[in-house]
Amino acid sequence: MVVDELSDETVDRLFHALADATRRDILRRCVRGELSVSRLAEAYPMSFAAVQKHVAVLERAGLVNKQRSGREQLVRTDPDAVGRARQALDELESAWRGRVDRMARLLAEDPGTEENDPTEGPER
Image (cartoon, rainbow, N blue to C red; front, side, top):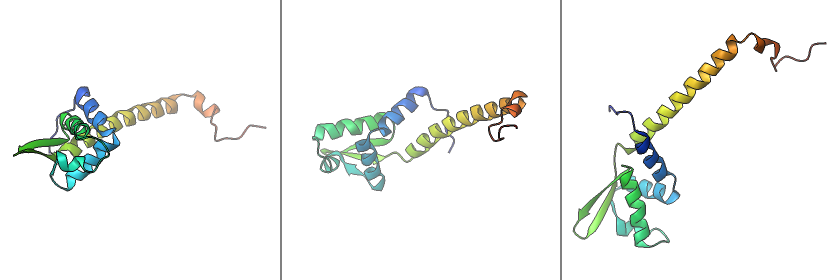
């Protein structure tokens, strides 16, 4: 699967959606199979409208798709959703690894770091 670089807005929506325990649970339930919003609402101590709002956040983040079937709205996980989340995390990891590597190179090049090596004991 070839994935374009994710925009900051896309990543923000993705992690905002995943930051809530109820939304993560809805996502897990929908991975197992398509569920109606009313069926999902039965599992939580909140109103049907509150569950609808959680599903809407997941949908805006691209994590689930809703499809109307008669009077019900069926929710299913987008199969590429995990890939997008993984891509966002991989991009963050790559950026931070690059920064850490650059710091390590700078420290290795600094002649003053050998004199201040904390692994060596005090000279007597």
